[in-house]
Length: 400
Ligand code: PMP
Image 1 (cartoon, rainbow, N blue to C red):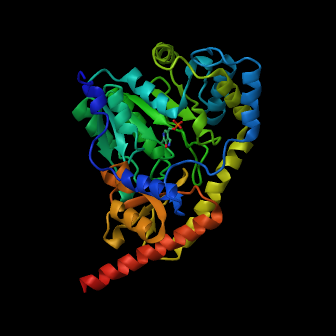
Image 2: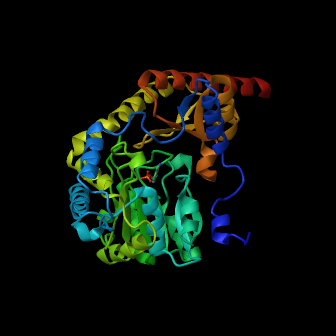
Image 3: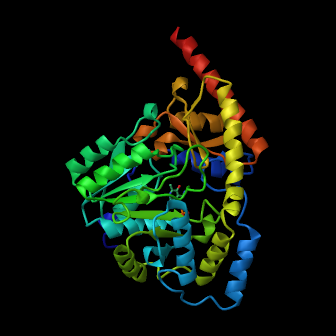
């Protein structure tokens, strides 16, 4: 066989990144073992049947041929309206391209902004696909570190330094954040925007969790002065409408960038199925109440978690503002995130994601997806805390 391209063979960092815990849990489940899976970011409920009904009707009505490549006009308009309502930034369908999910949007946004071999900045901790996505687009990922003491918020000064050092073409941010739950406050976004303007780079703003905000308010960096012309916002219906499997999302950006992204869609995805787009249009037209209902279980469980974690000292919760995860500090146990997650799976059949899966800055943490029914979630979290306390006690005793 001839060699495969370096680009595809070096997409992944290589080595262990903690995903073994996830696969070990899946293997146990396949063997019939009961495991409480608090791993991936997917609702335990399925897509609203009414949305599926809209897809079904659209398909039966014949919307099964090639659909408009940048998205059907009505959906682009609806997305533009949604974005305008939430951000106040004038937005029309010329600012919108529909993509098969936020993931495809992340890839397309990097292709649009990064020449081959240039640096694309991202923040550590990060959503697990980020570095591979940047490489897939032909750019070189460069992480800017954050710290638990400052709530994992990016320091604009460090971003500015990294951008200067690497002459970066883009910065990828994510608020509300996966995995940390951080919701970037205005001061952070102002600082990042100022850096982006001063050093003339693009901001790719991943806002797929914008309907899951528990504290504070979601602010889009695109709404800050001078940013609409240098920001590509990534959106998706996966999290807001429990539509992960429908693969539908978008990019919002300057019309000239959207026109070029059209060229990319022609050569890659050739658009998104028309009946899926009709379903998405139906979903968005349900308005905010439907999104609030989808987010409600996570809001409730975050409160359950706050109460449980507040009553003990072994495990600290990163004070998060949004998204469907808890980010827990397990360093008092003396274990790494990977070791803690493995031990928890072995001892209690509870699966969580090691922080290490999301970057070096997340070492010693675990991410808990709030994606099982309340009673199971409550039980699993109490077990996790008790397990953490046992380990911390044993560690202290051994040190004496
Ligand atoms: N960004 C973040 C931060 C995510 O967590 C996810 C999904 N887990 C995505 C993007 C991609 O979502 P999708 O492709 O399903 O829209």
